[in-house]
Length: 99
View 1 (cartoon, rainbow, N blue to C red):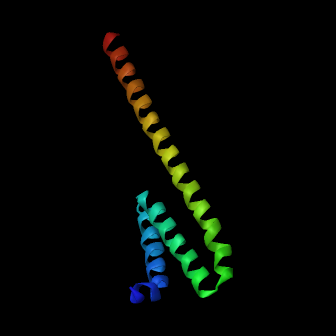
View 2: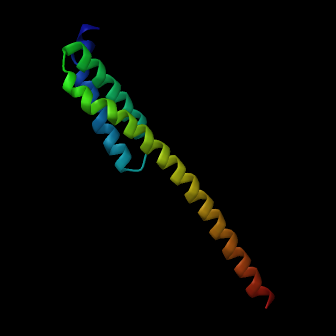
View 3: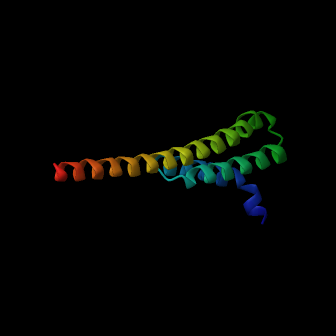
């Protein structure tokens, strides 16, 4: 257990690097992994007396949560647009067939 607590900074950094890779490859779970890394950084900052790190990490949690929400909203809108366009093409096709 002491080994894990002593190396939490490596865990946090690994979480954030993997999260960046996942987000870059369009996997939304990367935002959640990034938040986990940020929470780990908060623990590291508080236990090791690094208050300056909190100035970066705390807002980053909010930014990741907001981006996750926007991505989810964008995915729903994209699905709606695909259905709408498909229906539009189907209507146009049937109109051409009837003329």
